[in-house]
Length: 102
Image 1 (cartoon, rainbow, N blue to C red):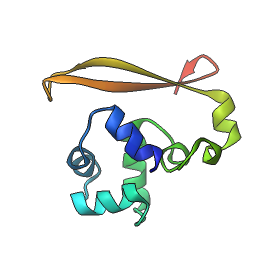
Image 2 (cartoon, one colour):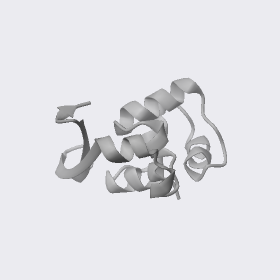
Image 3 (cartoon, rainbow, N blue to C red):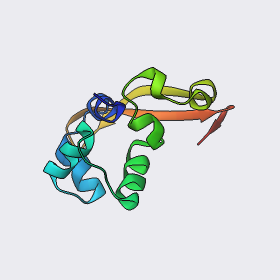
Image 4 (spheres, rainbow, N blue to C red):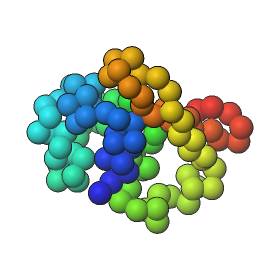
């Protein structure tokens, strides 16, 4: 499992939500998330924007695959907030680097 799937689940989004946001089919997104298919640079950029995380983190399969320069300089804070669209809650990811929001 990649961090892409973990982040999607933590943020309470469906595969359909993400597929729609990046402009692809659900099946194609499932393949991307499972690591069975690659996506275009355009879709990769949309994934980074959607999750507000760099691809090196999103596609890491474990902590060791995250480059050390990200591990040391990024702090990922996940907080709960209201999500009116789903009538529930979702997770918001804030990434800070040296006390500045990215």
